Image (cartoon, rainbow, N blue to C red):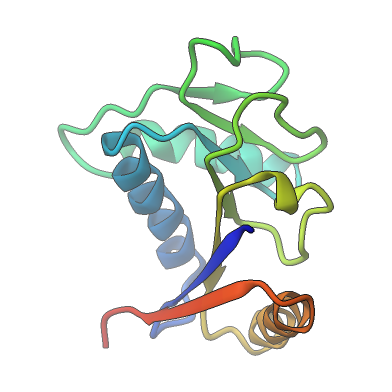
Length: 143
């Protein structure tokens, strides 16, 4: 069964959440996992695509957009309107709803910041997974 981890940031700045997505992708990639970052829309997909090149000096995370990059040779995919066919290790959910295809993944990373409107949506996602019996873990970061 899919393991779901909620990563709770102490602040409410959107860039903290984006950087967390990159750090989690970097960590999973270093462990040999194939990762899919699910964004809510094209703007977020483009922002994450750019940020994965620059979020930390000296880092290189081979990635591409779903539908543009070769899934077999690209360990990190980013998308918002499609789902990967082969990347089923780690799903980093940058969107604010549970993706319909989450159950195909071994692990799901849910990102939570303290913006009130998004905190309420994170609580709904937590409740969704809990009511369906998924293993849930919470990690309070920083602060």
